[in-house]
Image 1 (cartoon, rainbow, N blue to C red):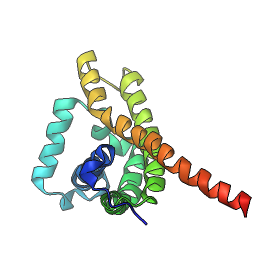
Image 2 (image 1 turned 180 degrees about the vertical axis):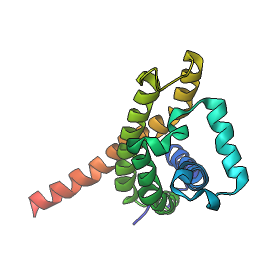
Image 3 (image 1 turned 120 degrees about the vertical axis):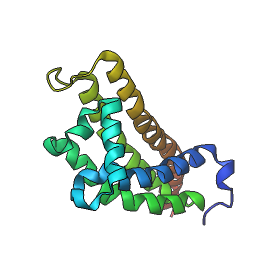
Length: 175
């Protein structure tokens, strides 16, 4: 049974809730644009993406169709993460322990993909990345929370799940 402790009294869970809730429109309207036919995308969203690419010089979003590894991350975001977002919001709101398993898996998956993204932006081929150092640092800074919050989810979920798993293991041994 889930704890009756309110979401606002659980600061990390509230952070995860806000992160995930904010990620839903970002996923649908921004990140997944590369997966939709252009005719489906309203002009203001196309303009937003063009502005973002110009402002942040993001070579990954700008060239997603030519980067299969990156586009595969976007497919995962749209097909796996997006449904998970709704499930996890419900679980976080009601403090359901099973949500920790999902957060651990999600956090590990996202942290891994963002590490690859950060490596590409930070250390990718200069011929491919025509960014100045300040532009690169700005883009790295923009991506960094998408590593730190999911990585925190992993560690936090691990520590919240470990006692439950250990307790279940102890009960089996005594029976």
